[in-house]
Length: 503
Image 1 (cartoon, rainbow, N blue to C red):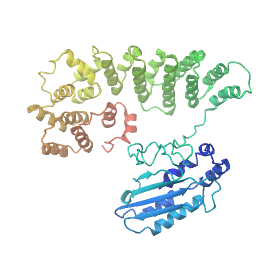
Image 2: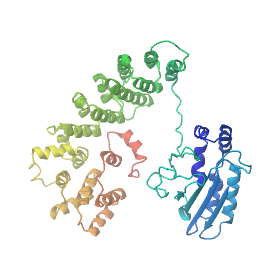
Image 3: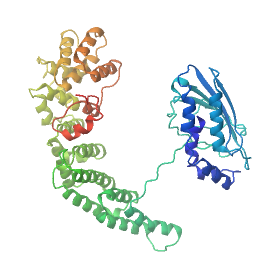
Image 4: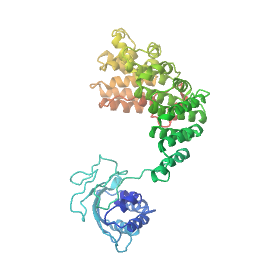
């Protein structure tokens, strides 16, 4: 099991091996070549699979000579049947490290593994002080006593970095996959490389690289535009800011039709690229052109519209007033309610018409959606008119008031809140579940009877979580559960992972 964790990182640790004192470069390369292409999962998994059903635990202690040569091992199991496993491990170790004599310093390490045989993937292990090391080795992810901290990171994707420079053990830092640079970016970065290597004596290399990037931005395809804009931001090319703005406005003009969730790949890719370029423009120049915001708010795809609004509100709140009317007047219910929520958070005196209209609607589902997605607006409304809901006899409106005030229903209010679980609208049922979850002394049998009659497993799980004291879900979680008739394409995408996809 040590090999399962350590070996995938050895092949990528060539630089680390060559820099160790007392470790010849040729031997490091030889070890790397020896370990490349070796997959230990199949033989080791086959061995451990035979003991998966056995009870108890299996403890293995390895002493590995990582420079090659012999490898000592000791095995002990609670069932005493370790012969086949020992033979298999010996074969695996010999295949990897070979039987030749070590030609470089041998640095052994001692590893103890305790494997629950019922689920051998979830194992714990301790790394003792290496035999060739006299002082303690600082290992992130381990306690001072040498025990592995299970909460530090998952065992299957362990990320440890050894601090001792005179100890050869591969760092369990998986190398990041190399992403090939866009051709437009690579061609412009050659200017900086030539200047750094001394092959070019021309002045102002960064300025020339920025000019090259700006020229490439106008001709780059959609797939490379974002990479070029990223490099413009990274190099802080302030002289080319206006060219980025012009390219942004030109791309916004190419959204010739509204993306209502049923558009083709062409409009979706343009909408996504426009959103990413807008983000880079916001970071480089600090503002967004109003025509670009209008185009993205009116013709962009629903996902891009939501992301645009959240980025504007979180990074540049003063731009909110310029785009508030666009997003509040958008046809998507979710975008309008989220805009109303942020508008009420922006100022306690705000009370958007889209929220008051849905709250005053005669349909219970609209009022439930309004309070689920814009609770700040309900708070502003109750602060302005505290007696607004005092004489209301609607169960939904009572639930809204109770949820906004954070109160627990009692007596008759509790019975009326229970009736919400039988409503046809999912949002109303969810709202009733949240209200009932605030009550600590609800009759458990009666509540379970209501849930069995409801037959909604996700609602049952959500009620149990809320009764346990967990925080209410975010609007994004509710978005996965509710049904949106005005955004069918997004709903089709979410149904593949939503809890109620069988409905």
